[in-house]
Length: 264
Image (cartoon, rainbow, N blue to C red):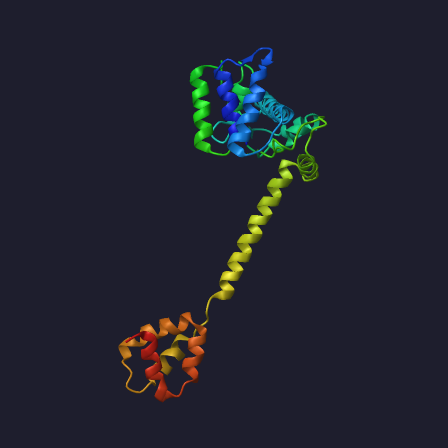
């Protein structure tokens, strides 16, 4: 639904349905109809305006972060780059910015055209060329990530028509918010633990084979072609069950058993 909304809003901007005073009334009808047609969802004007309000809030947060001293911008990943220790001080007075420490705003350029001002960084005026470029990025990327925000049919801040699911999701998300540093530490710890588990498990599963003993037992098999010994070792070393069966068979049956499994 985000992808459809973004495409529709970009189209409406290009058609001149956004001015300094805001969006023309026809825009709400067009966006609601687009969601119904392409997503099969019955949305309202309030739902669409709530999503637009969320986009505006997030775009402004990231744009403000870009303007802060000591913060940079990775245009490829569309995320903030912190170059000094000023992050903690900033989020003390701007707690809403916490979630963007390690999280990209992948549709930043499109939002700059839809909800930003003409002087938004790296965007400039809302020219037709930029609109075409933004629309092409949306089409190439397919479905736009929610970037940690509520779904369009969930958030309608302050509206009586707010859907319950979105409200529940928002409350759940708020409970799970933690600082970027804590997230980074947790991820690093998990990676180290997983590496240790994989290495330990791999060592535990390595078959232990007494090659000398195995070769001696093969050589005891009457009339067996000794040139096949390496293949027998490879066969039995890879399968502990076959190794146990081989040792348990009478010598008179071992040759026939080996030839059967070697397909010779």
